[in-house]
Picture 1 (cartoon, helix red, strand yellow):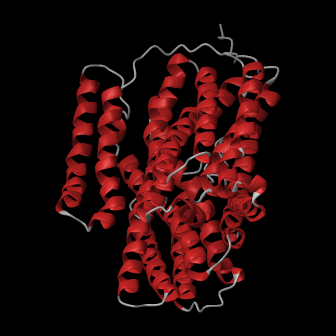
Picture 2 (cartoon, helix red, strand yellow):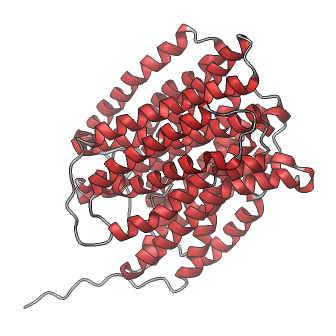
Picture 3 (tube, helix red, strand yellow):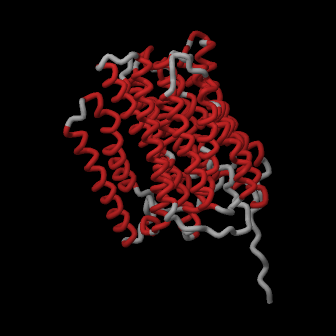
Amino acid sequence: MTQAPETEAPAYPGRWLAMSVLIAAAFMNLLDATIVNVALPVIGKDLDAHSSSLEWVIAGYVMVFALALMPCGRLGDIIGKKRMFLFGVGFFTLASACSGAAPNITTLVVARLCQGLGAAIMAPQVLALAQDMFASKERSSAFSLFGIASGIAIVSGPLIGGWLIAIDLFGLEWRSIFYINVPVGIAAVIAGRILIPDIASSERSSLDVIGVLIVAAAFVLLIFPLVEARRFGWPLWCFAMIIAAFPAFAGFYVFERRRERQGLSQLLPVSLMRNHGYRLGGFVALVFYSTPAGLFMTFALFLQQGFGFTPLEAGLSTVPFPLGAFLSAFTNSRLSDRFLKGRILAASAMMAAGYVMLFFVVLGADRHLAILDFAPPLFICGFSLGMTASPLFQTILADVPGRDAGSASGALQAIQQAGSALGIAIASALFFSIIAARQQAGAATADAYVAGFSASIGYMILAMATVFVAALFMPAVKPSGEKPETEGMMLG
């Protein structure tokens, strides 16, 4: 007697309309992650902000997003994905309005931290809801649509930010880049309540709150002094905080191992932390994703404050990078899961070469820099980013047991965001410290900014060399002959 094959649940009838709501919310989140960079010089001037405060406008958002991503994904499984999604969109929208209305830099930083939390609440639910709404044969199309929308958001963010500031919509200047989220967010909440299905969760396990607090403390100990130390002249307590971060991470491992022995759920399963391939891959992802975030934080300031570019011109200058990343998705689609390790090595070497090209473009800069001067190296770097992302995620997750796949994927996305926050802190510390030293020595503004930005690029070259060497020791993954469903999700 043969057993009847297991049938999956039917697809949700209104799935494509509901997916459009999910994509609109995700687009708003991704747009906000890139739109702010070109506005930083204008924000700093208007609010009379210290350079470290400007760093927190970007790094604070990314750090909170990274820290809250895993627990919020877990909460979606426990209390309901739709409920978490709607709350996240609403909270993000409210935080956007507060960011636009901020009377000073402190209020703006706090509002941006809240934006990061709102983004972390909604982001894990988007693909999780799509997984529930679509039958397996349609999921690839739904995820590809999400990947295309993500690419458009990444490409258009700097342009929209520069354009909004240039036209000075309703006299709002930089504030319009935050207010633009408000109507989109309100529409997404209303439409989401009507169109998104309320799928009951079978998850009853508890959230590892203490684990969240320990790893959050460890990241704060590491990143806070990197951002703030320059303002206080690198006092002893900054070095003490950085050193204390490492036993804090070790304490997180010990605490999670105890929860494992007690049979309790863990924020990051101990089996993953023992997995050599996953540990090495996590380190590669952390270092790899530190470079593009650090690049765009410093690049906007270099162009606008060092060479007098307008926000729109600065936005146009960045376009080759996300365009290259977007176009690389087509190459990844053709290669699927073949030559994964070789693609990581080749693309990381190519990205290092792009940073070297950018380094020499900056060193040779004079007072007549043009937008197109940066196009070749930025396109190479962006294309390399897109070429590396998908095979990197696939290689890291290839050796992960099925029972840990969800946790491993969520943790990897959190590591990616943590790398962005770390890169912003390191690149900015080099950038601003060297600019200050050169200006105190009497250097012209343009020369000081060339020196500062060159130092930041130097970190990026070293980071990509580290990625290449570490990737040599990553396991080679044999192709499965199947095109992965997550293709296109890893662009950013």
